[in-house]
Image (tube, rainbow, N blue to C red):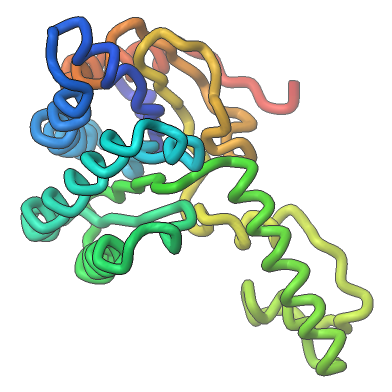
Length: 254
């Protein structure tokens, strides 16, 4: 298959339904994904030539779940960051985080930042974990950055280059008062700055909606909505998803 997507996004849905169907506790579905699913998928995607793989692991809406489930998932995050972080580094996997992780407890924030720093020079594949992520929240945070940079520019009366553009890149020479937000500027203010838009988005579990996943970036993505749940996402099913993508004829602009 020559038509390999450069970037695949995964909306990880169905963990709880899978656990219920197997007579297990709710956390068992999440644990199955962390212990048995993610690493084989990452390795297989890299072998197939995928360059970026994004997993939506925790949404801004997930905080509304039962307190015990939330606490259990946070423990899973911490345990597996310690357990698997070194292995990802050894395998040449780069990790990036998108979302507002400032809401996590300090220990989890520290573990996430350490993993990102440790793997930043790896090149086999970039794995992006969307944590406390929501598409609208990302856009609002990007706009707030733009407003902050521009206010700074106005206060300092910089005429050698607008502060907002200096905050994004330093190759423009414009007067701050004349600045207008462009698409390129906005893209560089998003969490995904430097990451190509997803070519393919897979949502497991049968639901056929984005629910706020990469709203800006998914403009021309292809979508695949299989019925199987995230704990059932095997490397063979990744092949299935990529084969479906290869059948598509992508059109831009309409």
